[in-house]
Length: 361
Image 1 (cartoon, one colour):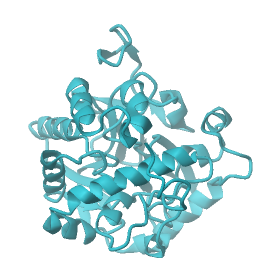
Image 2 (spheres, helix red, strand yellow):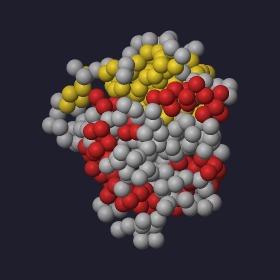
Image 3 (cartoon, one colour):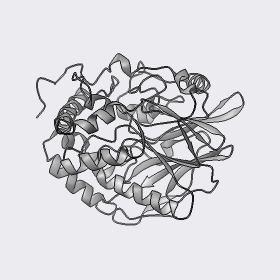
């Protein structure tokens, strides 16, 4: 049931003024230096995805140099059980992190809803459910004051140096913590099939290539890595005759493509070798960018999710279908301009969400 005090309210459609910044703020000196950088956005409280990701990183480190990890927001969401909330946040805070709107609202003195800044084409029921989820998560956080204070102190963006390239790490877009300018459905050239499926109108926000190029120049970065909008993509741009990149990893903790029950993270490395688990990628100069599959334990995650969010709850109503079968979105739609698919993936099981048997062909 939707809480009638929240239904049809502006909460979740807007975000506080302090969420805003300028792309030029990213011109500051890089906070991190790394040979290989994993950027983890939209974990959404999926503790199984977190554990799987750490295993992937440890396996890579056994045969190579140390890996730097950045969590770029919304690592909390479904984690209203004590074990998940504490393990996720304690783990994140041992690494590098920036706030997402979820973490920003966890530490806020005033309830501003989920802080998602949903655009007009997102239906009101989805917005109301997100506000309810945020209320439940804030209730969990009340008993974890020290963790919440640390989350509130996290920055909203940072820059990293990987080899010779500067990377701008964001949650939303180049102007706002919860901005939607870097959502694939808003990117020029427009994917009209996707926009139709999402209910976008011709009057809704679009982001031109000229705007992205302006942001890249203002920030003085070779690439932006972001998340927030839940659908992944990578698109290259030429700025002053040099190839640049915008890479949105979608979600580390939820399925990102139709029929593929796995999370996705961004890996950036000075190694030219295409890494294990890459779905698609591109090389710019001496740096390789990849979208890495995080094949977490689906059964364990659905069991934990259902304990916290049983049928009829806000999160179950809003996310259960995606948890089981992914969004109405294909890998081919995530590959824009020069970005290429690194492996052809084919389901070799019975095609159900219970069977996550995939292999590279």
